[in-house]
Length: 289
Picture (cartoon, rainbow, N blue to C red):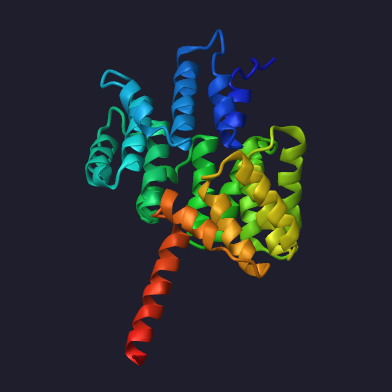
């Protein structure tokens, strides 16, 4: 009989965006050294997801193992634009080191950082061989950002062969269904609905359902889901961005949500698009004037 997966609850909380619950329930007894390392990396990644970069930077010292050093690198990268160059330089150095370069958590963090940089080919160099469900799920995200749903589907098939019921397999299936659109949107909605019935309701699940609703033209339902998500986390960038889009479709003012997004996440894609549109408008006005 297979040994019980002692980290199942912790992983699930992390994957579904219940970051504080992941941290609160991380004191799992009888872990092997390998499992304890995975536990610690998930806890620190949960702190990163909550924006507590400095805590992670302070707690992981230079004697920590490679996976935790990689997580610290992600915290440094996200904490300040000034750190980006040195972080990416360290990352290249570590990936080139034969002793640690193949570590799955290091490769995962490399994929996340290069995806943030929109350097998708560089990200895939380190993630494409897979090896863990996390890496396969990240590959799905990268391929969808590249508008290659055909390659994303191949990764999903691999995940389904490994474990069809895995939370990441279900999430990847929902992401792909959203990208494909059409009748697949309903299938994506049912996946998020299933999560909401089984697990703690999180911003991630509420946003998933809301995006499906918007695709299906149900903007009133989407708005109520997004406002519920906003109650859980008033600074969540995806909630704010989706509320901007939803408000526009409902003919309501979206400026407050956009202003909140500009303040809390100035690098968000929607903020950049909005700023470039404003600049284009200003240039056009100046030309007329």
